[in-house]
Length: 111
Image (cartoon, rainbow, N blue to C red; front, side, top):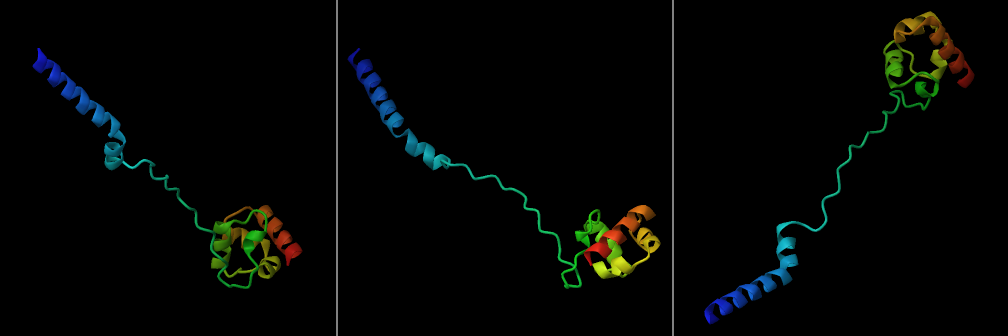
């Protein structure tokens, strides 16, 4: 019975030492603070190709896609959009003539 008591005391002592050092064992196995999540960063919109600063997206209703469509037919700044025929703008951007006429009037007010 004495042997069983000694064996039980030894096991309890070993368990106590392991319990006291548990933080060391856990910190080796896994880092304390998890890595922060990685977020996708949206790149800024590209600058106009001509570099003169008159961006077609200043006109309400023209985004990057419509601006690229207009640049592909030679309308690169607000002055050219203001002087353009609304039917040509409508055909180039694939929009209604009323919307194109609105863009032309906005461009003439901004230019």
